[in-house]
Amino acid sequence: ETAHKQKLAYLAYNPGFEQDIASRYALLSELRSALSLEQLYLELQPKVRLSDGKLIGFEALARWKHPNGQQIPPYQFISLAETSGLIGRLDQLILQQTCSALHSLKAAGIEVPIAFNVSSPDLIEPRFFNRMLSLIQEANISPNQLELEITETQAVKDYSRVSPHLRKLISLGMGVSIDDFGIGYSSLSHITDLAATTLKIDKSFIDRLGHSRADEQVVEMILRLGECFGFTIIAEGIETEPQRLTLQNRGCLQGQGYLFARPMSLPKAIEWARAQAS
Ligand code: C2E
Ligand code: MG
Ligand code: MG
Ligand code: MG
Picture 1 (cartoon, rainbow, N blue to C red):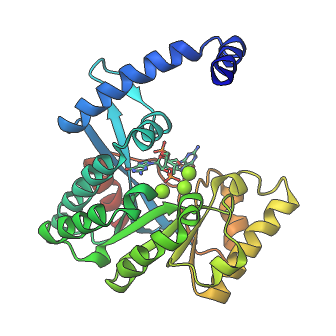
Picture 2 (cartoon, rainbow, N blue to C red):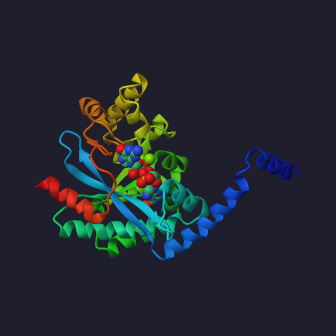
Picture 3 (spheres, rainbow, N blue to C red):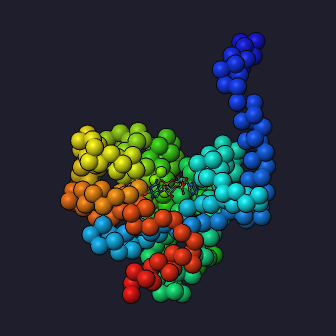
């Protein structure tokens, strides 16, 4: 009864709610078939050395082109996949494509690691974890060509169950990045033994560089954490030269963002890397 009343109250305040449910439901069934038809694909965004913009790696980002021609943004289909139990299949599909992209890059003479994103429900599941390892092995990829990215929020939420898996990957030589670092809930006790090789400073801090002294200080603190505990630090979402310069002056060595390159198809990424090397 109370639940029913709450629902009515909710609907009264959120008139779009029922339509939202209907359209989410339709999108969900389309996502399910897109996954089995492998209509999702990856784009690669370069990670670069801040001093000279030189390529040091790529990040694979999932893309979905709906059969009606529309590009569905990741913030929509990733959260949908996460809440509907489809994320494991999505992450696996992108990892498969990442392994095959590594072979294509190598054939083109480009040998840098590619990072892939994983959501924590997967990482908790021993079955997903083992399938991930065998997939990498079957693709004939050495773990040190790969890097796993997991958001700080997700890594910390289930830290005791996620961290053993992350440690195992690190022991195999894989990089582990904590994505969107600084907006999650890492306590200092977590940070001292965080199962990670790299912290990715969240874009929101980079956006406010030059406008907010407090955000500059957060960035400085993250760089200090890197020094103290031996993490590589990379800044994400760099869009302007002043942001790049500020980061470089503070001792940040690596970055990623539209200033350097947007996510691109594999052929474009190869072209980009070759143009840079010549
Ligand atoms: P993320 O892993 O933090 O990726 C960075 C996002 O910022 C990407 O958005 C990228 O396109 C965007 N970006 C990079 N540089 C800039 C910049 O300079 N300016 C701006 N405005 N944006 C920039 P995207 O591709 O929309 O992905 C959003 C999020 O979706 C990702 O955030 C990641 O958390 C998630 N995601 C993407 N692919 C996958 C996947 O295969 N599996 C999982 N589990 N999550 C994924
Ligand atoms: Mg990422
Ligand atoms: Mg990020
Ligand atoms: Mg992000």
